[in-house]
Length: 573
Image (cartoon, rainbow, N blue to C red; front, side, top):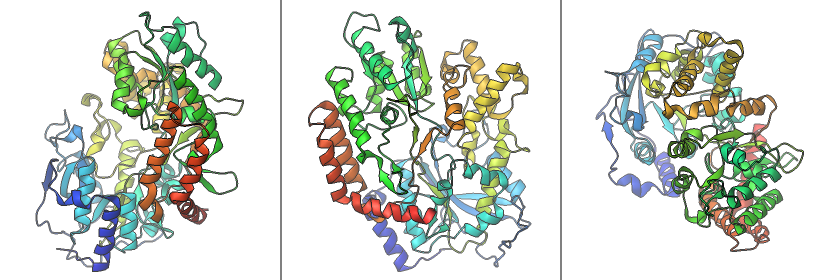
C-alpha cells in the first residue's frame, strides 16, 4: 500500500537533496549491487490501531501476540556482498539467526524493501525512496535526512516510547558518553530517531616504532618535547640502517584529520582541538580550529616540515598513499585510534617482522594532561515512518540486540562473533546495531584480570573471542599481530583504561543535526581550513596567516553556524 506524502513534504525533501548535491546522482542507475522487493505491501497496513499502550508497565521484551511485519531497508558491506557471511552456511541477509530471533522472541518479522552496497549507494537509494511516496516502516537515514523528515512530519516522535520501553541496559549504554548521544537525535526537543551509542570512540593514541627507539637509545615519550625530539631522531639518525636519509618522523595526510595518520592527537599535545566544537569555558561552543592553541601546533608542524621530518608531498597524499610509506618502513610516528595495528601498521610488520609498533597515551607540552579528542561521529539514525502501527517495536529491537549480545541471558558466541567465524561478526545480520562505546576497553579489563589471576578459562563473550586471537598470534598466526598490540598486557588499552577512569576525553560539544548554514557552508569552510593549514605547514604562507583564516572563517558562514550551534546547545542544558 502506497503511503502518499504531501507536496510540502516532497518539496522539503527535494530541497534537502539539492543542498547535499546528490539529486542528480540519485537519478542515475547505480552500478552497485541492488535487490528490490517490488510491490511489497505492508502486512500491518490493514490493522486497526493496535499500538501497545505507552504505560508504566510496558514490557521492553514483550512479544506481540499477533506477529508484526516491519519493512526495513539496509546496506550490505564486503563481508556480506554475496548475501552469505563466511562459515554461516544457509544464512543470508534475508534469512538468518538475527531475523529468527526477532521473530521468535518479539513476534517481529523483518522484510527488506531493498538492499544495496554500503556507502554512497545507500544514501542515494534512500533519497530516491524518500521522494517516492512509499516509505518503509523503519528507515536508517542521515542526520540531515532525519531533520528534514521530522520537519515534514513524516516520522514518529519516539520520546514516549523511549521513556517507557527502553530497557535498563539500553538506557545505560546510551548514557555512557553523556546526554549528547541521545540529544543528537532531538528535533525541537523530541527524540525523532535512535542513533549509534558508540558515537565518540574510545581514544586517540600515539603509536611509535619502539624498535627504532631502542636502536637509537631513546626513552619513551612523556611530553610533546620528547615527541619532537623523537621525530628529529627518526629523520636524521638512520633508524632503518640503510645509510640513506629516507625516513620521516610523523605520518600525516592531505586531509589532516582521521582515525589513522591524523593530527588530532598531535594537536591535543598543545591543548588544541581542531575540527570539532568545544566549550570555550564560558558555556558557549566554539569551533576548535579557530583557537590560538591551534596556531601554536601549526607552528611546530611547520618547523618539522622545514627540517624534513614530514613527507614533502604529504599535501597531495591520501591515507592509502601514506599507509604505503608506513608499510615500507619509512615513518616511525602515527597518531590514531586503537585499531591502527589492524590498519595501517600491520602492513609494516608483514614487510619487516622486526617492526615493533607500541601505543602510548597522548602527551602534552606542559604539566596539564592532553585530552583525547573525541569527535561526534553519528552518521545515521533509525526512524519510524509517521503512522506506523507500533513505533515502540524499534525500541524493543534495540533492547533485544543488546541483550542477546551482552545481557545476562545473551549468547555472544552465537549472535556477535562465533569462534569458528574468523572474526567476521554475524551481528551484521541484525537490522539494528547498537553497541557500547566502552565495550572494547571493558573486554581488555576482563582479559587483564584473567592474566593477573590466571583464570582465562572463565572468560566469556567478547573478551574470550579476543583472547583466542591473541593466543592464535602467540601460536604462530602472524595475521593476528594487531590483537596483542591492542589487548595484550602492554597493549594500548591500558592507556584507554586510564582515559576512561580519569576523565581524559575531550568530547565534542555539538551533537545535533546539521544547522541551516552548515548545510550551505560546511564544505566551503572545511576546504578553507584544510587549504590554509596545509599551506602553513608547508611554508607556502606565514604562520600569521592563521589569524586571517580565523577572520575569513567567521565571515563566510562561521558566525551564523556558531550562533545556530549555540542555540542548539542552550536547548540541551
